[in-house]
Image (cartoon, rainbow, N blue to C red; front, side, top):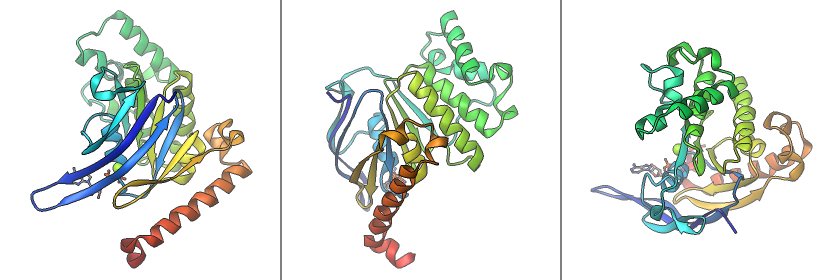
Length: 264
Ligand code: ADP
Ligand code: MG
């Protein structure tokens, strides 16, 4: 049985003058505890699709089910990690990690303990009483990760969370985030335009096409690559094979796209 199921999702953005067909007939399902990437060029509808799964926007057509029940008919918490960390600059790191229960007005001693444990897990106990602008970009993203884990979400969505970081920090964080999400047995969906990142982190990859956004291809990452940490996975020969295959697929898609073929 699949955990998350998307059935025939289509989405249009309407303005006074025109309609943008952002997503067209997207269906796929995800197993509990797995890590899935949505890989595609800018503008193919990745963020729109995550926003639909997070119930931030309602799709024009189609349904999203979690455990066979439509998401809009249940109270499931969904965690979101973005490129920007959106930490509150006037709150300490510990207070930022506790923000979920604080907003829900349920903050108690147990939450404080959980937050402290999470800070220790992410190696930032020492800065619990400092403020976000005293931390590096990578440290702030770790805090954002802990803050999202605090709410114990049924789904963990990541929208290009490493794209603003330098390459070395990004590689370190990929290992770190995946390790923690596996330890907490989270079902996760990563949106990225980075082929290497998708292969190194995922169990499954859905390659998306543009105008409107559709699923072009489902790729399963081979077991030997999945078994390794993202950093180590990059050195495996099957990683390189898959990278070349996906590169070709995406280049072919771009050359079929009249906008790209005329501007490249
Ligand atoms: P991606 O995350 O893959 O870059 P998006 O989901 O942001 O893609 O966008 C998909 C398409 O929908 C693009 O053509 C974009 O211009 C359009 N779009 C996104 N958000 C809006 C919006 N709020 N209003 C109108 N059009 C939008
Ligand atoms: Mg986006």
